[in-house]
Every structure is written in structure tokens, then in C-alpha cells.
Length: 312
Image (tube, rainbow, N blue to C red; front, top):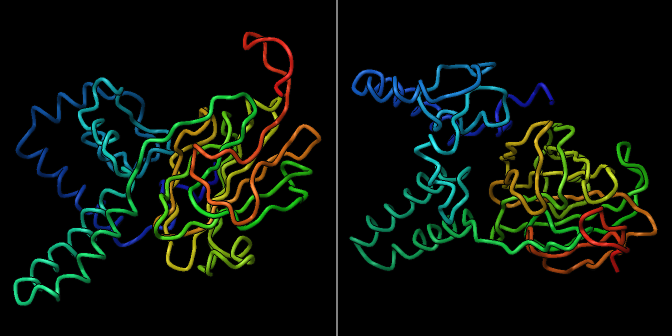
């Protein structure tokens, strides 16, 4: 684990600061006026505090520290687990409430004086809601199928030599503000490393953005490709300056499982091993959907228990 990654959002941000400040105030209120609740929830938590910079009251306090070894609550004891079922990215709920709420209020105020004035902020409110949506996805189950890690447009397909993977195919995906920005694992695998690099905020359509912009690498070992590694890189853009990633080494992800997001337009890259068994199924310019669109397939032997023979 990169020691720079002390929260799931290493770049920080204004909304994150507001949310952390509200958490401090909320904990003080709960300890003063709801002592019974605080004691009951404390008795249900598991783990140790670790590097957590404060004593948490409930699972809401762990939102930005999900990638750390610290306290946790079982799903059955987490009163706020229902938030994961909302049709919006849980990591972006604060932005949705604060930014979206601001423009909705502005719509009402300006519309009170003259309704046409309320149209522009209403459009922005709609864009904010649209940006943070989290629609359900149907994940392909075929063995060896590589699914897209992001929504967007394919802007790069190159053969490269990667220092961790060796001969590889690099697929770049550009995400506009209209795309869903939640990232998903392209193959089932175990996380072996998470690395963060601060950087610039160039337009994500520019090729040099992949080298110079702030980015975060998640390296996994594939359970579907003979234990070989692959990499998913989250890259900020000109306006998207907040990478979110909540996994840590040792986590096991299923194909299509969510592991992070990039807020407000960006680029995602997938680097997978290159060999004769790999068939690329997309071209530059194709539109893809995270978790649902097939990017490639490894034509590999099916593991024992999944049937005999070789996948076509």
C-alpha cells in the first residue's frame, strides 16, 4: 500500500473538508445527546483503530478510511448500509447534496423573480444528478472475458512493455461529464498493490495526460488468466481532480465489482498481458460501459469444475 494513501480520496478537496468537519460536529452531538446509541454501536464494532485520526462513532465516520486497517462493522450491524442501494455513487453523495442542492436552491430563488432565470441553474442541477448516478449493470460471466473498467470512449489501444506486466495491451478510455464515473474491475482478481502519484490536471484527451496528470494504479492478479497481473489506472482530467479508490492490497474483487470513481470527467486506462490467447474486441472510437462492455477475451483452458475443454 502506498504510504501516501491515508484516505480513499488522496487529492483531498473542498467538499471532503466540509464532510470531515461535519463529522467532527456530528460525533460531538451524538456523544452529548445520544450516549446510549454511541455505547451500543461501540459494542458492535470490530477491529482496531489503527491509523484512524479520530475515534469513530459509527460506520459513517469510516467513509474516507475504507482503504485503511481500522475499525469496521459487519453488514448486519451497519445501520447505514442502505446507502449502498441508492441509485447514486455513495462516494459522491456529499457532492450531490451540496453542489446539487446549491444549484437547486439557486433555481428556486432566481425563478421566484423571473422563471427564465432559473433555467440555467436547473440544467446544472440536472447534470450534477446525472453525473453521480449509479445504474445497475449486467456483468458478462464467460471465463476470460475482459470487461471495461469505465464508461466512455476508447481513445487508445497500444502494445507496450509494462514494468510490472511485461508485454501488454494498453486501452485508454476517455470519460466526459455525461458518463458514469464509477470504476469497476475488468477481471476477477486479488489486489496486490495500490500506488498514487500527484501530478498535473491536463485535458484527459491529450496523450501526455496519462504520464503527467495525477493518477492512481490498482494492480491485481487475475484469477481468470493463470495468476497473471493486470493494471487499472485512474487519471484525473482538466476538471476532474478527485480520484477515489477504496481497495487495498489483499482485497479480492469479482469481475465488474466497483472499486472507485473519478469525479467530474477523466481518463481510465487498462493494461492487460499480451499473448496469442488474447483477442481484442473493441476499436478506437467505440463507446463502452463499465462492467458490461467486452473489451477483450483470453481464450484459455477452463478451470477444473467449470467444464472441460478450452473456451472458444
